[in-house]
Image 1 (cartoon, helix red, strand yellow):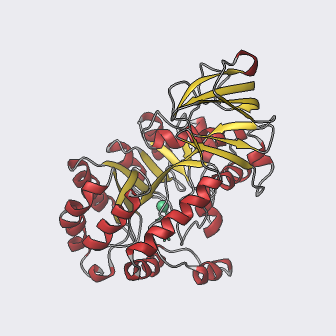
Image 2: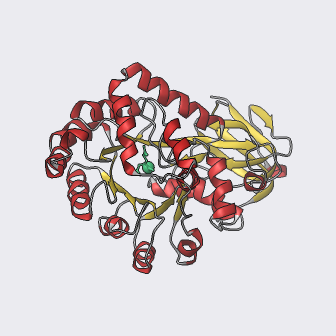
Length: 389
Ligand code: NIG
Ligand code: FE
């Protein structure tokens, strides 16, 4: 495999504190060498070793590929009408999920797979090189297992979310649905998944149900992550920390005790500003979390109901404008933060030994991701050493 020198990088975000000032480990006038699927060397351009090929970044910035640690891509149909109604003043409710469940169940495997590929393609062109995605729009044993199987054809980061809402068939028997999710459905789904997730919320699953589901998943070798405190205050965040979940996602309504729990545990707070944007909800208080020392990740939550965006640059811009994050904090959260939320050390940074996942920006620095919102700045993307956009 020939080595590639990427040189003439105006600003390189490494996310490695040993390579440059924190939090981003920035190097100016930088270069890097890709060997196979791995970064072999990083440093100042004038110190770069020879390589078989050279790619001139021409004064552009380079960042680690975005790590989108939260999406719901296995679905069919869309919810344009619901979005229109919301923009005319209606509130977002978890019940809208049922519309997508009906469309997803009616879709063929090929249609679902094509949808996943389409949204992953969008994301890749916007610099996302690691992607988590979930089931949760099937809600039968067969439909959940098929969603995870299809997801696994596109990413290793697959999450079992049979507990998205109570399946319509069990509307009068939520305990029966929890028994299914922790029993037969888990048996069918666990082989395809790395993670188990629950939507812990009024109208979905309460704290006791969520605990039972996450513990059952854990017993089958799945690591918990939790949709927590999105629409209201609740037990989700503290449950996530108690069960050593990799991530508590949304974190929009937090008490001081929730923030303290996150600050004292290993659970990343994953903020999903696309959801607040698309549901016109209050913004999560990123500043409060960061000031308390919580590890914060940013992700898209890409789904047809609450956040139909695959764009990490858009989420970075929202987080800076509306969640009081600095551009440095937001770019870190969208790369290294996402990696932490997936408990990965091989992605989210550009350093010797890391996976060669990176994006060049048509801009002199990463700050332009927030400074120039809506502009397609991602110009070249390498994933595992292969230039793919
Ligand atoms: O993360 N909160 C639960 N699930 C999704 C929304 C799913 C939908 O509305 O279809 C979310 O926002
Ligand atoms: Fe979600």
